[in-house]
Image (cartoon, rainbow, N blue to C red; front, side):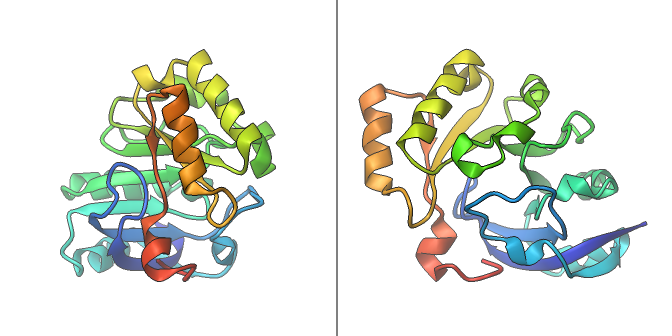
Length: 212
């Protein structure tokens, strides 16, 4: 059983409630979406076919507890579910970064799903599978990447309609170099939103460097 892997690398987690933790990232090739702010377009193509056993062996070399499976869109490869299960069985703390356009219900319950709800500004809002919100666990997280104030107001409405903060951690993230993080922080404070405002730590540390 093989998956097309673009890269496996060791870095600090730059987002989510795991921010700052040393993490091994397994980046799968391919994505059906084309978000206007995408910073991993290099992973749309390329990569190498790897046996799942070989993926696990390479992950183990780094000696890190935390694993993030990402893309691209990792769930676009159906055998990603087998990889996730194997990583959990091996005792890792596993998170999955997914764009929300593919059904998350088959994901192993031990995996923390980081579900990116696409905003109007992303250009992919019509591809959101809203049924994914029904599968959220308290160990999951919902992320809104915000392009502007209109995206913020839209996300605030979705937050209220679906009572997301009662289900799991909710992340509001400004598009790097497009939305001023201080402005977003002030909006969140003014509206007293029950969300975690985040910036991309990896870009603060290393800039827009592929693989970080």
